[in-house]
Image (cartoon, rainbow, N blue to C red; front, side, top):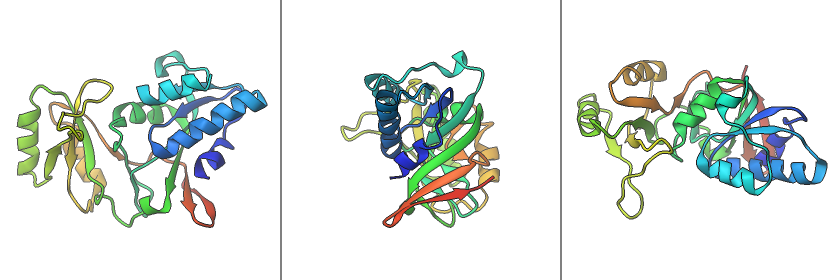
Length: 219
């Protein structure tokens, strides 16, 4: 429902950032339907190889972020959204591309189910994308900061690699009382490519409830 609702914000001629993940999948499906059935004319900018493959199957025209002047609106999921509308993203290991596309977007919409709405961030482990070289040293350093880093592996025990062939360290913080301070701690560390704190990024949040989607305008 939230994917279909969010697609209502997309109009002819727009450059649209297409998010990654289970909720964003439904958005891409709805945009593909509108392209096929309504003749919607847009340019999609995807946030992962996975979303690009999905959009191509639906004949949504695509360009990379470096081939467009800006993005009109990006619609993406989130892993957690706090009471003051800060977010954690990166559960699908696409946080770097997601943050790049969001940064160059005029408007950002997050689509989530109600379980993602929390008082404080941190119950969902905070993803940090790091280059492989030095990642053990970086993990050791994050442990000294009591950030409980865990190298992300898949069900077969293989190290998860991002679309940029980097690793993910998930920080099991439980409760992040000062997201700005944590972001300022993580960003300068050598080997950190990007973290999953999306602060002051979102304009509109669409939340799915059993009775239907609720739209919240943030800024």
